[in-house]
Length: 369
Ligand code: OSB
Ligand code: MG
Image 1 (cartoon, helix red, strand yellow):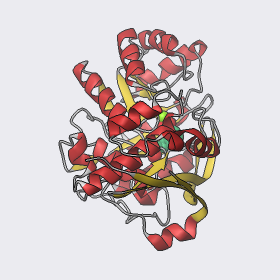
Image 2 (cartoon, protein in one colour; image 1 turned 180 degrees about the horizontal axis):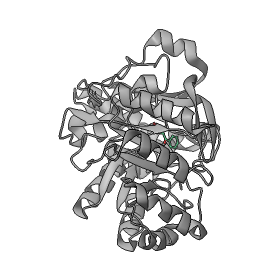
Image 3 (cartoon, rainbow, N blue to C red; image 1 turned 30 degrees about the horizontal axis):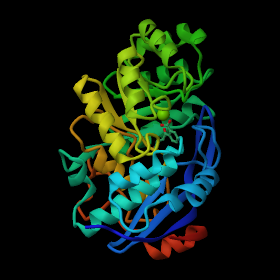
């Protein structure tokens, strides 16, 4: 059955964060989100683009993603009919722009799955109906402030804590969290590319604290340097920014640049590429977990489905809606015993709440096909 696409809506929303989120690349106080809605002969589909307002985490940013969708990706879609493979073939000649491509592919996939009455989880191969959740804790002004935040997240049931680190905020906060909450707490750190290989001795200082992993210590394109660092640390290295495709994952694994991978579907161009990385990593005994980009319920729903695949053996950054927003644009995701349930309805299984969506909408454009 061929599907016709009549058009695509690009909608921008402004979502204030409940607490500022500071990383080594900047501070976020409000999430500027690009939503994609496709309208097809089979019905609608929604997706969320992971791009942030500035190109710091990666080269994409929300205005840029919107522009490339408007100017190139949406107009290239086959008008008379398509399936997901046809969409991938159409988008492939355009270099990069994976977050933008992912949003378009995911919205189309959502529309197709809804019309086929199949859930994302079932389509992707989910092996369980709920997933264990961790939380990513930003850089704070002081250690006591950090300890209060971590204490609250643990009280809410989060099963794993990830601390954002940067030079000057690494050993001390990690030691303080270990001392306060004990050696059994599942703890890991994320540097967002803030170090260089010259910092190897400092990073080796993290080896004393029994961390699950250190995420993306070096620059995005430092694959070889990560392999060298891996030889100097006992703490497992996990890559985030460096892995933009299954080919990158294969290279990283064969180089020994990482022993864990953070899979973010947007970063790798979509859920199908994300699943390829999962399959490859699993075949090599490399653990994976599902990362996040401070998503609303729209993006979160599909991420939670992905995180239910059998190779996702570590808790993800799939936190509850309240960790990010006072009001989510879907029914909120709420933790139960540190887990989120995989949505069961067709497609992503969630719908934007029209009133909330209208309230947070900043702009909307319609691209007819
Ligand atoms: O590096 O994993 C990251 C948020 C935005 C951009 C990059 C990252 C993050 C997080 C938070 O760590 C993940 C989440 O809770 O969505
Ligand atoms: Mg990261």
